Length: 451
Ligand code: RM4
Ligand code: MN
Ligand code: MN
Image (cartoon, rainbow, N blue to C red; front, side, top):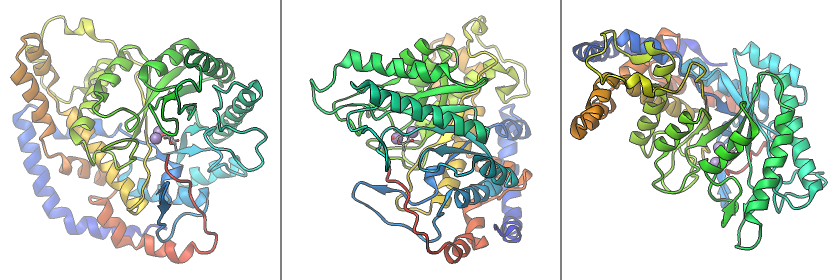
């Protein structure tokens, strides 16, 4: 459905200025001993999954203001993801929410996705709402519930989600629980955690071969006093108790203000329990804004931990052609990430005011920029300054990478793969939104409100 002619025309119109900017960046990087081409190629490995729930306009608990051409079903959502992938070449997978986007025929959906060049990332279960016809209520929790029958129902739902995921070709399940309490005394803090672990054990025991299970923490909302999986510590306890294939998922919006999220990431890497991310950004709470829109430096520092860990797993990822320049001897001894280091990168956002496709294009670009900047960190110099306790130069080493304008580099990667130099401009020129606005009439699909 995307008018590729229009995309090429926008690329052509920008070619001259892009080449100038790219040459300037290449020269600048050369002076630092970094090959632009090498970084472009390393950036290629950064892919991120789009959540099925982010393609329609989101809402708040006060209302929702839908835009034109919203996808009416999961098929149309996949069509939109295909557009995002065509423009960015970095979003080949979809993370499905069940039952919100439960397919009637999983095999058919998988086939449709494959025809668009798409596959499926983690499937997400939902025991935070009651569904029509559901026997027992989750009002007072699911896995933590005092009633064993409710817990059984919640476990059965998760097994069903795994089953659907298997048919779709997913290889992981993400479990976010709204379980918790809003008043002191409402819930036994330790026993509710034990019951939750017991349910997770039952789900974990039924994980298909090659699958992973992610637990996602969140400190509050909808429970306002104590959530059962409130923080990375609780999530880590669960993942460690469950076993090797359980890991923690870090949603950037699920932390109390001023939490040092890059430190959380570093700790989970050290414990070999970093499963993946839900990227977004926030000013106050679980705001689900575009990743990198509020705290771009934080996003860079998180990416820095990821690139650092990935470069231990695969030293070629150091971004530079030159040999190590006097890094501190013995630094290798502290390296831990290991060869299997491959966190799942996913987006989890709610687009209340913006066109969801445009918001996701901006997000993917922001994520790639942050990752590219992290690739530019001179790790040997950083090791060296850290060893010498040269605080100023250590910080400046990070900032030098962060302050590099990598926009031409990210655009270059997109173009090399057949994508758009400027995705939002290309989307607008293509007329896609107008086309789907006239095509998608009638059904009035209302996506769920933001959580
Ligand atoms: C939650 C959490 C989950 C997401 C739901 C919609 O706050 O972030 O990952 O599936 O919202
Ligand atoms: Mn999330
Ligand atoms: Mn959330």
